[in-house]
Length: 350
Image 1 (cartoon, rainbow, N blue to C red):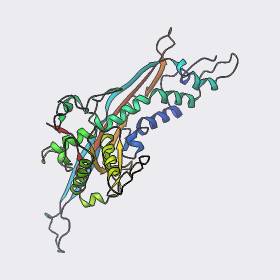
Image 2 (image 1 turned 180 degrees about the horizontal axis):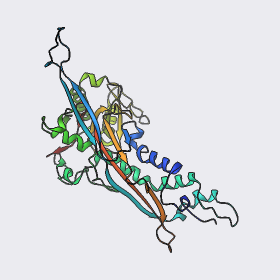
Image 3 (image 1 turned 90 degrees about the vertical axis):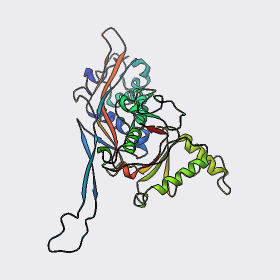
Image 4 (image 1 turned 180 degrees about the vertical axis):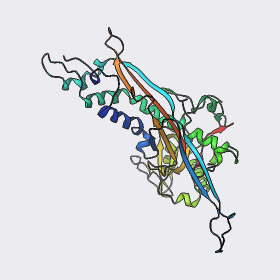
């Protein structure tokens, strides 16, 4: 059989394989696939997310305008990607079925695997990382912030909430995810830097007893959302699967509603799309404008720690058949206009 070799012996990936990895890292997760996050790449240190609020800018016509009347308030939130690493060891023989068709017959040896084969193999190795990123976008918290988050009704003891805990792939502690950002913002003093772009509206906390409680909270959240935000085309309602299942059953049980259990109820409330999310903790509902465009209220900043060795796939050691996979990443998440988000969060922030 032909020799197995990644990337012609080089330790860094470029071109077709790296481009596939860049896309995979940012876009092959639930949050992006549902069109809920704008991704800004290449942030080496810090990236500002500006927000402008205009006050009374209309006044009577005068030869000399009243210069004290116009109000212009400028505030910034930031993306500051933090370092973490993906690392695992594997046996190439486990993936033989993928590269065997590309090997020549006889004693000839390929010096380099076809880029498409490398891409497929690395995708298989990175499946767990994709799940981690999707979860971390919403539930990450640095050690300092995790210590301030607890269950809002005592069902989860302090320090053991899903926020900032360990995902199956590793600890979610390298940056603050969207939910912690919301909690920090809602708890901030009105005069603080975090509140300059406004504050989110927390319509409720705690757990839902049943689907009727979910529907009641949806109406409360809708009424708490400003009409100008309701009219935005990108407004969606994000909901965890436990809450959606309860709400879906409640709708099915209503008189004159769907009674065919083979069909799921329409994912809409007041005409707005409801998106059940695997990544969200139980009893969580978030209403806001989330898109892949620059108008999104959720942004992710991503970069790679070292341009020369973005990704390494090499032999573990000379006398071993095992290879190692190593990838250095920098990532952060932030909300842009907190005042345009309404949420039910089952957590309290001290």
